[in-house]
Length: 340
Image (tube, rainbow, N blue to C red; front, side):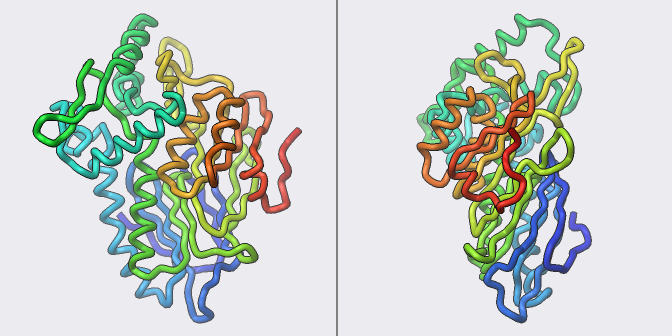
């Protein structure tokens, strides 16, 4: 489904778990080009595409080419769609879908990188908390512990027929912490192949920009969930930004407020943080790390971010303290300094 396109030099986008204000300070756009923006509804969120194009007709052709990819990935990689590739894997316990295998392999690589803080094996916990269809509710602490143990027991391994299979338990996979970022990367790569020299794709707060420069960057504002102001305004020539937050996607279980970012070890929602924003070279990596860093203790998250090339981290604690590393601090636009 396509919404009405917009033309202009700057825009404000309200999306998913963060409010991202994007201003094109002036990428290296040809003098006769247009800034074309359109909103696609996919993957359960709004996907805003802002493209620098020679003309409107070219931009529209680019959008028609990439929009089906958003819907295909949303269909195949959402565990709530039983006919999709991930839904079939969770049901049959095996797959030979090469794209799905590659994305799951990448997810497990990032899981190892984060010491298990990012873990796609919590699919059954997500379902039982009601985040898929709002029909489930975990009623007893021992049920949570059993589901968490089953998730830790699940194994992803090659099958004899050349595919891959799930063994070890009846736990299921979720790609909710990586699929949006992956979709953004697929779309951006395709747009670049089509000849789009500059643009920004924003899928519910997971975004990637390209085509800017040091003196003409993209400007991205990260919302402060406490007061609606901005925690930071970042300037990017290119790269990805993703935010995970505890303040949007919530449910109630036995009178306890539960959000969708689950600690794989305990099976419970992570406490102590409001949001985590990550910058990285790709949106796949930024998306997954935002979840992993949310689960990790702040000191470990900062240490890991510092060790990864091109990765920046901004963390907002539940009591309003902002912590960021040098990489992200270097992207600040010179306004909105960190709160004390």
